[in-house]
Amino acid sequence: MKIPLLKTKHKTFRLRLEILYEDTDLAIIHKPAGVLTSGNSFKTIANALVQNLKISSAIDAIPPQPAHRLDFATTGALLVGKTRAALQQLNQTFEKQQIKKIYYAICIGSLENYGKIDTPIDGKSAMTYYRVLARSPSPRFGQLQLVQLLPITGRRHQLRKHLTHLGSPILGDPIYYNEKHQLKGKGLYLHAYSLRFTHPNTSETLQVVDNLPKRFRKIFDLEIPSDFLLR
Image (cartoon, rainbow, N blue to C red):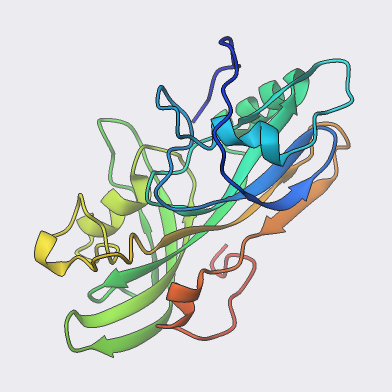
């Protein structure tokens, strides 16, 4: 999803962020749950970036700005542009679906071992590949599954809607699943695990991983593949 260049006076929201990668042109940070990526709200990741990242030394340096969005409840790797040229090129890369994003989710129910979901979202084409890595019986939910996800398109709530469509909603989803099956205080079990893309300045392939949160590993404690297993 394209995010326009900042045109308003920058605000600073005090929030310590974990930096996964940083150079002159861009950075990748861990987005915590419960914070908007950007928007009209003051408490956003966008407004917390300046205090966490180094200002670029490039001639077209800008206040660091997210190059895409993660949902309010989603954790994981978030790509940030630090120069005007880098941010514009990263926006174009997302539009052209040239950034490989791998997510992990814990879902309720029973999916096929692997597959493709191409159900349209809001009248637009949408595609997600998935693979089930592990299953575990659950007294409360029947069965839980650790699912690796590769979204090809980037529609709003795509992974949440696609998995619900297959009858395996994401654990803790407050929008697309029955309220009585929520886990109070645990949040949504959806994590943006890795980003792989061509660096806008060096043209080198860059892949950065944001390891699964502890709450995931309390349910499924196993080695996690850093690449997608199906494609």
